[in-house]
Length: 67
Image (cartoon, rainbow, N blue to C red; front, side, top):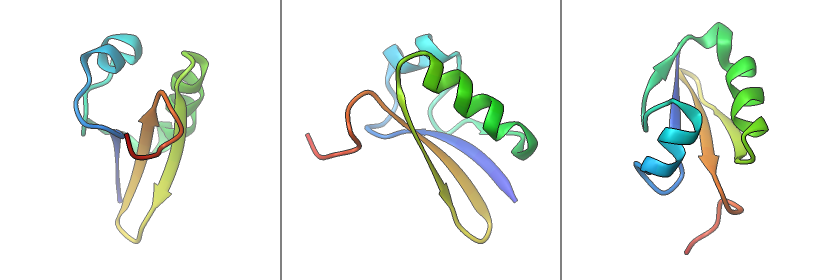
């Protein structure tokens, strides 16, 4: 299983600079809850998506809705 960070509206330099993570960057599965807590602490919204083979940490500054 792998985990990755996904900025909801694509690569966003503002989010990358704020969090220190890149769009679609793979991260260790055992660290996902620490990463989520850190990103949430920066003021961004976080949503976890789990499938059979992947965990995706979705990050957005709005409400995960169309713009």
